[in-house]
Length: 273
Image (cartoon, rainbow, N blue to C red; front, side, top):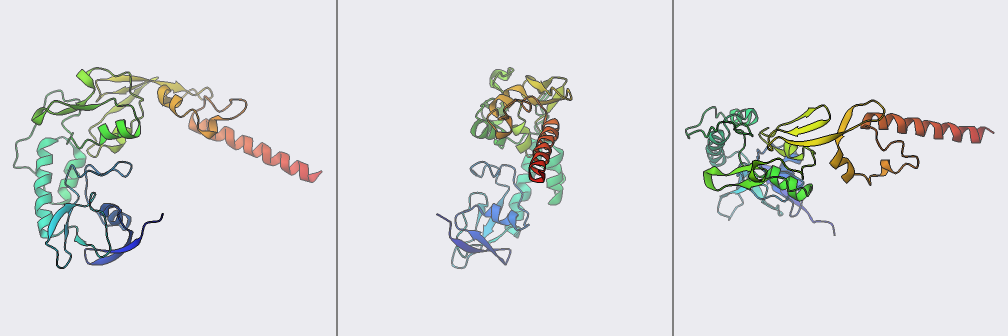
């Protein structure tokens, strides 16, 4: 069943949307910037970071500040994304996050957008932090590892200000797929992976090591072995002679192009006879 089409008002302008979708999605689709540290389209929104706040301004409704990722749009919804009240709260939040993750260049860049270049709060600098004092505990890495990849390699450890994200007991994990999904969704650039020959090292996750697969054509290491096995059922592996099975994406693409070219040439020859 298709969702009902509705009209919403963002910063005084009218936009079309599907009833019930998150406001942040409507805004971003229309080029309206709303910052966020915990919103990821592939995951259910949960408003943890509070950065995506907006102010509801419908007539007859008490003005209030809400997170745009958990605000489901309805017909006639009216919000402002950068009202005076929103900016006041957002700047304080940025100061708090600068104290939590003082080494994150991405966070500093976001803060500068709002004129925040320092924090009044005590910075939490930890020696030998595997996340380089850049983690804001948004939870995206934990959630994507568990909910999307199903690996459950990392989790929250400790309580209160001692809370961390890492592998159980800070030991190397045999469950890691080496997919780097956690690094891709991290909003502050805290998570580090590096490839060392045929091994992918999850430096942030207790130096967990994952074996990489080698292309049988060019010799390049191109994918984690465990991850490759997980996607083994994809259509381009189902070639009868198994030629594509152990190729990197570049060599596979070339081989498939050659195959399609030969098929096309054979078809031309058939019609030419």
